[in-house]
Image (cartoon, rainbow, N blue to C red; front, top):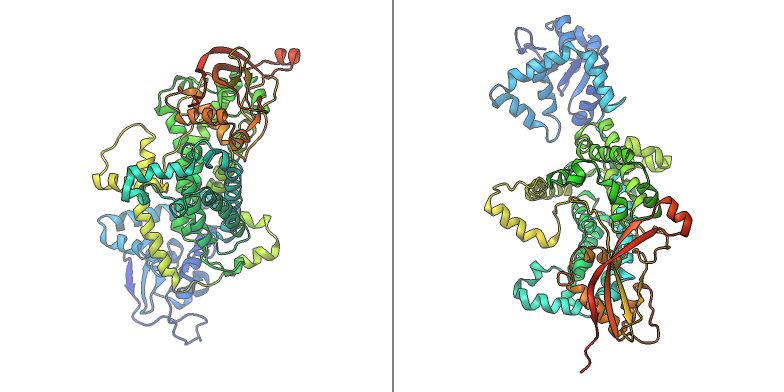
Length: 636
């Protein structure tokens, strides 16, 4: 700590080593208290940051070389000795030493130029120095045994492999449904979608409706998109050219997302695109496999991905309270959630049977995870580890009670970024962990990539803050230029707002599509996964997402006019489209399509244990009316 003088010249070049050592050093020296555990921990961190630019030594070894510095001054604060022999101590010594580390020079600039920064910094330093034991315990509590700068090579390797698996699932899951959803005989043919976009958008269609399908408007173009995406996902999994591959995966999935409309615009589809976009700047840009070829990932890109996880989790909690929905405020939402969610599982049926007090406490726990734990993302290692554990357990619980396709897996992949190599290495072979300790040294491209990532940060962060602010349902006066910029990038799905179930669905309307040849006897079309047959047990289908089954849940919450795709679906049933019928589990008219179709609206509820033991039914239902009255296909 500074005594009477915070800086004083010694009048001669300093020498290091034994008194007889006459070699004049060409590097500054930071002298610290070698008996202080707190000092030793942070000196190890600074040594990593500054590398060979600075020498470090405990005063117990070199104090004899500096008779002008009293033993009390050595014990009271660190001493920084410049090459010219000048000495600083306390906070100024800390900032001067850190100025030798890349990207840390701004700290000394703030100390020197900002009013009151210097006295406040010195006062804080004296406070910490006077309470070293307490701060040493706090450091161990937050960081663990080591505060050295963490590495993220293994973490990134694991994250990108998980992202590759998720992309493979997403492409293949959509691909096996593509003909029925957007094929030429599907519900929303891609070719017609492109024609409408071209007619309404004109020359702006390439920016307002981004898709590679502009190059090929027929059905094989869709097949090439999802098959190419699946193939590239495998390359990402095996660690081949991760950066370029991620850019292509993002472009291919964006193309499908634009084409498929309502069938590919769920929050997890957008989350996958945003994650992939940021990961382009997080991934190593190399061609050959091998972690030894990697350089450390950009800390800015890592921070943006963590901020995405923060927005996802925190916004999910805020939107529930900001909506004013009474079921969230009185903690009764989970009493209906398990039976009203889109595709429940049989474990969800058992969760629905839990007593009300257990469901209320579960809701409290959910709010703690969504509103409190997200802030732990920005804490040191142990705080992030606690957030990781809470988020993963929460996502696994959601996955057990409901089918949310690859959403839970994608969220867990983002949670992996809360860990560093110290924690991840124990799950890797020793040889691979050893490779990560000697990464390839960065070349000239390091500065190019740093500039690109810095530009990304400046352009994207304001949009992310805008997206986060909207979950509070309080409009803010953002600059008009920023609003226009958001409109420009919106079609590319690089920034989005999140928050599921802001208003809890308290009932479960369910559409049952029926056909008839005489208008009297009606036979139901059975879907593969959504509730229909009362005795069919709710099943697990995730990470695959049956897109039609999901859209049927949303359609039941609205009406026929607000879901034009449903009308197209009925037309395809009249036409006996094999592609659309393949999306269903049971076609009651295998020989030829029926003459009449109708859609009946029921309200479904889980049965209780007594009723299920009695008749084996998992559901009970009450008819509410007709969603679509009997119709027939006009034949000219």
